[in-house]
Each structure stands twice: as C-alpha cells, then as structure tokens.
Image (cartoon, rainbow, N blue to C red; front, side):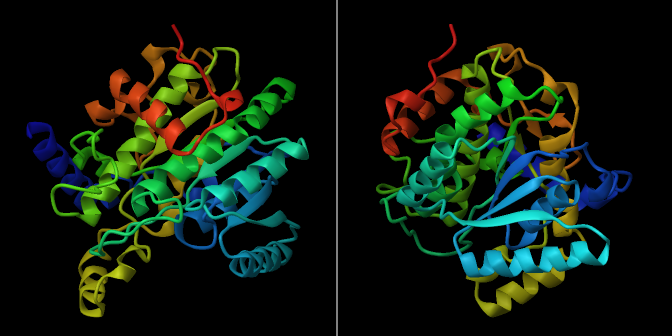
Length: 349
C-alpha cells in the first residue's frame, strides 16, 4: 500500500512538472542517433506517438514498416509521409503491412511471413496499445482482457516470433547499427500492486476497473522487458528497453462522455506533451548509443532498462524487476499465446 501511494505521488508530480523538467531536452529531430539502412517495424503508427516515431525513423533513412490494423489508414499515412519527404528533397522508404496486435492469428501470420522471407530486422517498436478509459470490461478475439491482450500478450508473441530475425540481423551486422526491441509502456505501471496470478484478466472477484487493467498491462510490459534481458544470451546483440513517453495529449479519452473529454483536454493541455515530444523516449531507445542500450552483457544485475520521458534510465516499480514475477509472467504468457517451443528462451543460470 505504501508503494502504491508513493507511485501515485510520483505520477502526479511527473505529470504537473514534466514540461518544466523536460524544457532543456532536445527536440525529437535531435534525439538519439543514426538508423541509416536499418529495417524497423512500428506497430500502431497511424496516430500520436506511433506516427511521430515512424516518421522520424523514416527521416533518418531507415526502411520503416507501418504495421497497422487498418491498411487504409496505413496507406494514407504512407502517402502523407512520402509527400512530406518530397517537400524536403527526401524519398522515405516505407511499406504498409496488416497487423492487429489484439489478434494472435494476425500476429502469427505477420511474423511467420517475415520469417519465411528471411528479412532483416533491426528495430521493433511495440507502440500499439489501448486505454479504454472508463469503459466496461471487454475481451479480445482470443478471450484475453482487452488491455492485457492488446498492450502485453500480443506484443509478447510478436516479439518472441520475431526475435530470431533480430538475433540473425545482429550477428550479421558489421556497421554498428542498433538492434533493439522498444516496448512503449507507462509510468502508470507504478500504480499496479503486482499481478494477481489467480486472476490476471480480471475475470472474477472484485469489480472491474479499466484503470487497474491498464496499469497491470503496463506493469507486465516492463516486467517482460526485464525478464527478456535476463534471458537473452550475452552474445545475442539484441537489446530490449521499456519507455515511458510522458503524459501526452492524444485521443486516449475518446471512450469518455463528450463533456468529460472536453474537460480533460481543457484542464490537461497546459501540462501534457505533444505526440512529437512523447516520441522522444521511443526514438532515443531505438537509436541512441547510450551505453545502457549498447551493452552486450545481459545479466540479471543489468535487467533494468526502463527509460523515462527525459530519455534517462530510471527505476521502475519493484514489482517490475522482481525475478519471481518475471519468471511466472514468462511462463504464463508463453502458455496463454501458445508460444512454440522453438521460440522459447531459457532462463539464464
């Protein structure tokens, strides 16, 4: 309970001071390093932080795959980015692919196609997610609670199915290009008092809360990132990071009544970051030569790779770095998504 109240205080201070704290942080265009010649996948790229992330990677001469659940919206974004590039004398390298991270069948189809083509993959940005603020409990096509399924279990499966491609790319790369997995999480994970292993999907017991479900899914993202770092062999060359983009003015309140949406936007606009400002932590972790992001020794002592909105490594909640929770989460997730044995990673001794 003490940690919960501490997390609430930390988040409150973070939200209302973020503009002041981040005033000296470089703009998105000046964050991180080069990704020239890299192949990147960005999920949920058609709006908000995802759009800014995909756009910036493309501007830096990466080949960017816009992995969208709506091909029509993806193609509209592709056209807009191509036109924007042409105005500045650039020809962005972009492609649109269908991917719904809330559907395991869609994820398997996307990943298996990528594997079959033996395509390189340098950067995977798991950006897509939901926060059905104030809405009733819903489930994905696979029967998972909506937030846990979309924000965590889907990206978990996608990451694990694409991990061999990332590892192969890292081993073949001789140009110092980054090979990364970036999980877009949230400081809100600090409000989750762990994960109820007997009821991870809020299927029974106490009344459902969309906020609690969202917080739990974000905790799972950070805990998965830490466990992935523990399990990645030292020589793999793949680095995983979780990021907090800050409190960003996006369309997250669209599930609230109209009057409440308007009130939220009016009250929070002076304190919230723009999507471009919120994308800085994602782009930094995808491209930077920060030692934490380039180290090759992935041991349990180096399991924390959680970056805040200031693009610096910070301490997440104690639950997120708990090895016992990480081990349980890995096993539970693998069983939930029916991860094939050949894509498993054993715990490091």
